[in-house]
Length: 138
View 1: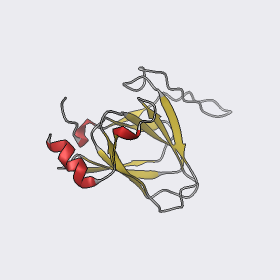
View 2: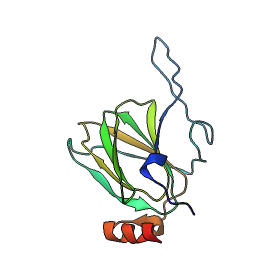
View 3: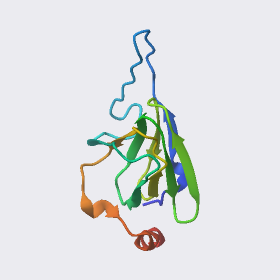
View 4: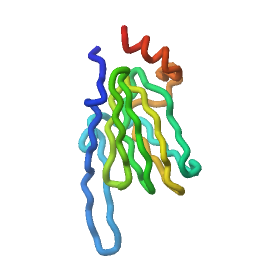
């Protein structure tokens, strides 16, 4: 399996259907994002300025959207770090597997919407950064 790098992360602008009464954005499996969605979850009521994440996934791929408000995603491949700022509900970050991530600088009232390629599996998580670096060296 090829190891992912921070340069494999992509900002993807989703189609926005603009209407006078409000906008709508739809996401379809394997069309707007490069995987079949198996799980959807969202983070909310994160205190302003707080962070989440601090882990990597061995197999899981994600598409992360700021459904409301804004936050930063710091992506780390063990060699390089990149920071992405999400602040629009029609723009998301594609996260391939094998990358360490931290979510930071949540604005007050923000909602982080995550579309995931697999159902929850605790065995897929790497929650210790040193173990992550060992995983990357395999």
